[in-house]
Amino acid sequence: MSNELSSKSCTPCKGGIPPLSVDEAEALLAQAPDWELLDDGRRLGRNFHFSNFKAALDFVVALGGLAEAQGHHPDIAFGWGWATVSWQTKKIKGLHENDFIMAAKTNALADSAEP
Image (tube, rainbow, N blue to C red; front, side, top):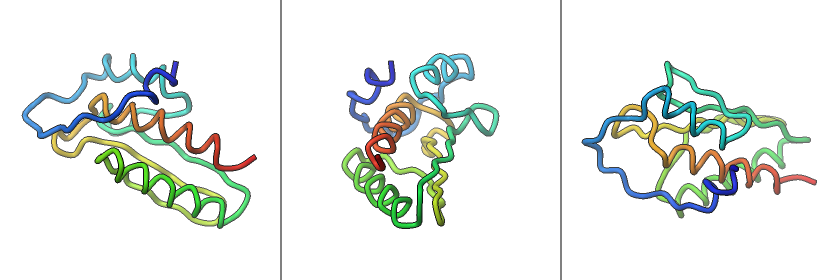
């Protein structure tokens, strides 16, 4: 099911709309495996593991390029063999479908990052 989300593109969110409810977020979460709802359903987060620093760095650089192309940007922390990514639509202080689209795209990117 994550393929459905990962095939979509982000739509600009200028604010002025309510964030997804926890129930709406949980329904979309099923399409973004291994992500979890954080901050009372206002943010998505996931930890990724890699074999070394370069693999983690390459993933972060690729994710940065994807974020720029989609116009939607995550918070990222990384180090030797790991990266933590979180998505939130800051203009609405919560989650939007865009966050789940990007979570699915991030999963696809991670799946192709290392053999």
